[in-house]
Length: 417
Image (cartoon, rainbow, N blue to C red; front, side):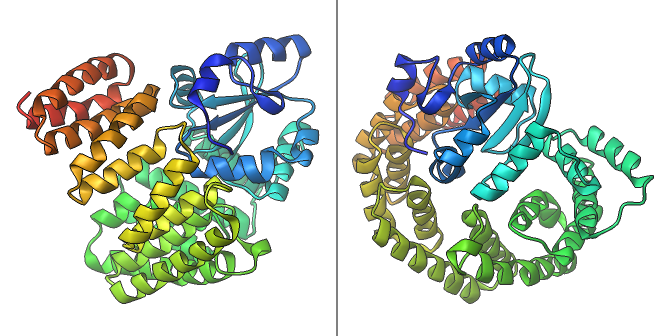
């Protein structure tokens, strides 16, 4: 997806290019009048996976044809409207594509980065009401982030004695979700281990993220056993689906290589971790050299993340400066470069970038950018301006984005405000 331009969004709030609306009320009205379902694309300017989907799926003719019977609307989750619908529909993953009717009754969803064939197949299944397997029905319930509904679905489906590895995976995923929700860390690790042993494809890294709290709470022996199971599943998967032939690669390659790095970290395998992330960074540098910075934002940001993981500060700074030039109209890379410079003790250089990022930020992303700017101001010796900024943004955050208020309040207190 190309850079989201705030100015363009403000100038034309009701419609976007290629048949996409950007106003929920307009989409609901159009859906009611045409008696069509709505496909909501939940996205954000910082969402690297969203750019992959725009570039490789949503901009293609095959999707446009598949979506002819739909009302299409893109919603930025950092805006009040997008954030509110995200909360109402329990969307917990970006990108997410929710099919709903004009009254916001959900008809199904597709979550995360998908290859074009996978996404189109899932969209077709939703729009045609194709019969789903028990595993697909349970997975759909889990993807909707309604744990109670998923439990009911499994209970109902279990009466038919479903079998097969896909059912086992979906059932183990539900076991993991229930255990995590109840903070039963031992049960969560058992379910996580089952998922790793059952194997699978590009969804495996997400289970590691879901089990994060359980892994952190486990004793050394259980944590090591769980991470060894993850290592056995994820390292070969990365060799095949990240380093392998382009046609085999996971759409969300970053989650895969990040998960492998985290497993090596957790096992204390520093040399293996560094060798692995070094290979990833080298490979992404090659892909970037072939494509050119600014031509593929998903690749651009994957390379940025890999350079950061590998500790390649010089490469990271040079790349961030290219990205700042390539994407001048949003706050993301101005903020990232400002943070990088601040962490390197170069607050004076970082301040103009933090000001640029702050001026371009909006909605739910502004409190974080304001906090960054305040930290840099304080580090540069201007605590008075930092505290004034924090007071201003804290007032707004408490009214509109209450979850973002505590970090601002904590920094203000730290600065003696």
